Image (cartoon, rainbow, N blue to C red; front, side, top):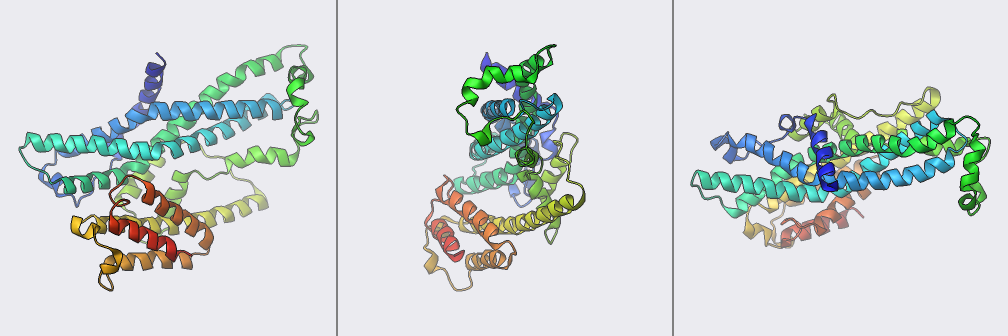
Length: 378
C-alpha cells in the first residue's frame, strides 16, 4: 500500500509536465533519420525511466529532510511567530529535499534511461528485421541518456521540493495548533522540551527573546542557496556561443509554469553584494560547463572504436584530438578567475567517471585520459 501511495505521488508529479516536449534527440544519430517514428518511443522510454525511480528517491529524500527540519525548527523557533516558523521550515526543507534527491538520483536515473532506451531500440530493430551493432547501440544509448539526464534530475528534484513543503506543513500543524490554544503561552511548549534542551550547549538553546541575527541568518541563507539546475541555466545563458540542444530543452523546462519559486533577493547593499557573488558563481559554472563539454567530447572520441579504446594514451600521435581536448580543459581551468572552484568541480566530474560503470571509465584509453586530466589540474 505504501508503494502504491509513493507511485501515485510520482505519477502526480509527472502529470503536469509533458516530458516529450523537452526530450533531446541528437540529430547525428542516423537511426532516427531512417526511422522517425522511433522518436516518440524514445520520449516514452525517458518518461518511464523517470517514473521507475522517482517514487523511492523522492520519498527517501523528503522523509530525511522533513525529520531534520522539523526537529531543528521546533527548537529554534520556539519563541518565534507561526509565520516565521513556517517560512523558515519551507526554505530549509525544500533545499534539503531537493539536494538529497539530486545527489541520489543521478546514477540510478542514468542506468534506468540506458536500460529503457536499449530495450526500445532493440525492439525496433527486431521489428524491422535489422541488426544493430552492439558497440554502436551502446554509444547511442549513452549519448541519449547523457543529453536527457539533467532534464530527469530537474524533474525529480522539483517533485521532491514540492512534496517536502506539503509534508512539512502537516508535520508542523500539531505544534502550531498547540501554540494557538488560548492560555497556552510559548513557555508551555518549552516545558515539554526542557529535558532534552537542558543537554544542549548554551549557544544552541532557544531564548525567550527569539533568535539572534546570526541564528536567523542560517535559515535566511537557504533562500539564497543556488540550485544546480538554475546555476546551469544561468551558465548556459552567459557562456559564449549558441546554446546546445540539451541546454535549450533544460532552460525551457526550468522556465516553464511548474518551475519552483526561488527566494527573494536582499535589498540595498546586501542585495548588490549577493548579486556579485551570484555573478562569480555563474561565471565559474559557465567555465565548468565548457570543461564538461570537453569531457563529453573526449568520451565520444574514445568510444568511436574498440581498437582505439584499448590503446594506451602514449601511443596516440602528437596533436591528437584527445590531447587537444585535455589542453583545452586545462586552459579553461587555469584562465578562470575562480580557478580553485572550477578545478575542484572538474576534478569531481573526472573522478566520478573513473569510478562509474560506463565503458569510458573502464577502457584503457579512457582511464589514462581521465588520470592525465586530473594530473594536469595540479
